Length: 427
Ligand code: CMC
Image (spheres, rainbow, N blue to C red):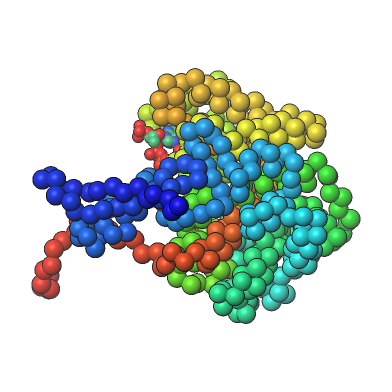
């Protein structure tokens, strides 16, 4: 028997029916009121700045329960995946919907390993940037420039083309990210070594030089792989929505991912990991926490790495990262005073009425910088690494959008509050 569709009626003040709106059932989370007939039936639009109450698409990829503080990739809990899986397996899961069997995984891994190299011509692009350019600026430029190299990927109705595009992107992101870093320190670019795993190869390209053999520290590679899993997708966040919006016009996917990188860069989004370390350094000492919290409460500044649009509970990624930060520091024999400071800051904030009332908890960015720092990764690269991981989510969401018959060009409307029509008169 067909499922009964819930209907809601919008009436005017005299109880006259204006329109009838269907409600779509979700498998998890809030059901969604379909407002598509609203404009045709009533001439009115909805107003929702920041999309607090708007579902922009249907998706089967990732689910966030903000109240409980849970995150699922294709139904699997993030904590479960972080403990038991690896980044490429998670990438396959996000892209294909199911975990790969042995054969599927080895085919996928082989394909990623053998697409890591960039067209040699792309190397010359880097010289156009200042040496002190932020690596995120370089990422936006160079990833966007990939669109000029892959003209064969213009027919996205062809599933095979979408697959090859996804794999090229996932494989080449660490190469570009490492090159952005090498450029900033004036060292030669390192070519990918396809004998290495994804995270190991990334570390080799970041920290190796042609002068000496580079030995990857397996616990650092494991921690990096873990961080990549945690950052791989997060449903319809700002950068993913940017990628979907750009993609909705039929734009080249490499250019769409470049738009996602630009969106991720902001301190309210992926740029927060770099901002957290800057904030901790500025606070400098535990004795300054109280004064800093007072500044936050009087809205002079924000506690970076805290708060989230969806999570009104502890971000499950922050829990894993906090634990992992302890592990990495221990395994590297380091004792970072910033870790102590961050823990004290967290404890004080979580007991403070301002944060309790607003349900502000640590998010994924609060402790990630501390791990990156322990790995010897410079601050300017934190958000770049986030972008390497999130490319999987962006491209999985882009692919899903292509297969969705409801998807059309994203074209929001507005509440116009400007001048009414007037005649030109020279001043
Ligand atoms: N520090 C101090 N106050 C905050 C913070 C914070 N980090 N976050 C929110 N608030 C306050 C805000 O001032 C407002 O208070 P009031 O009602 O008195 O005006 C209230 O909480 C609601 O804030 P909002 O800005 O309306 O919330 P939002 O959902 O629009 O913003 C956010 C979400 C993530 C942009 C925000 O919490 C924030 O700026 N956090 C710091 C930056 C950060 O850590 N970003 C990373 C987010 S997670 C990873 C990612 O997305 O990439």
